[in-house]
Length: 361
Length: 124
Image (tube, rainbow over all chains, first blue to last red; front, side):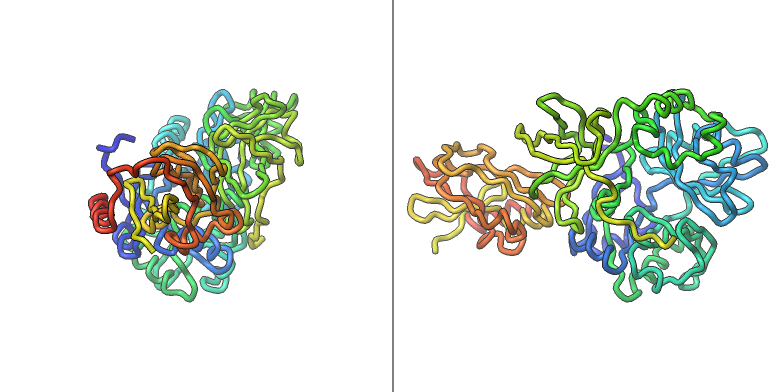
């Protein structure tokens, strides 16, 4: 983005400033990368207690009308029609070549579907979805809603709900009516809370006033999701990667894999039958030196892949990374070289998540 | 102890005879955040002022550390290998990076503390 372009702000912009957030541009928004405590402390606190993240930059929308789930299924191999009221699911939007247009959350709210898409992709996703809708189904963007993520093992006692992992329901927190799902992007238990923009600050203040809740920024969000083995669109997923390559076949419904009735199905099916040329894997570099995104991965002197996300995992206490490698090199334990500043850093393919998930299943 | 000198690359140096002890400033460590790894130069390496000779990595990013003077690396702070957080805790003390024996006159653009602080303020 050009420097001259004006950054958007979330409804919590004033609060971020008050809390000392260090603001950076992200997907067209001015967002806090960290607060004075720092990324390490925010990360560790999320795993130990609870942290509040502003994720209002993400796109929220509703699909309303007869046949909404079937309409959305034209673009995703997720089983949306089987989603029961009060349940949410992770899915992928695909293009004709089976490439990933975005990853998203879809929830069945009974009378409508609720969608959360990536900030950087909402301008692509929403017109794409709109383009396949029958006249009976309407897409309603929800730009007047904020999204807060309260994450960590203390959340269950701080905000008790009836929800189980990936459950979603309207609840009241501190007198404010919100739509909460028991989900997140950290590998921890927690809630993602959609709230009208004008009540977002009051809600955030109420959550921050709860014992042991710390504000956390995009830096900790990134290191937490990396340890949890979760993909970041734009880094680990893009329009050239398929669900098979990205190791996200689990997000495809069984029924959908019988019918093959979604956009891009041909390529996905071919890769499932014959194997994908490359696969997303976890990588553990030896020692303490992190290997970052775009680091070349070599085996026997040949480039066999590239890191797409990498850094230091504060909870793992060591560097962690994920990336794509040619299929013969994707087995757990495979020794590879990461080329960091022209030197080969030894690493091994490792199972993900690096930090065990602790969801409230 | 002699006074610290500073560079516009946010490094400090303290002369001990002909040898400069070098590290990154408090401003630099604050901006970087939690340091998780430091890649130090080889002892004996001949370096030129302005050359990138070390790397400091925080959770979020990697940054180069430059030789502020021309000379030879005579010592590196091995303690940072096991505990890189010393860079955050004591940037101008136990968090030093390396020592360079100067091979000539010092650059004339080194800053004193007041000038460096004014430079940092000008960046805000």
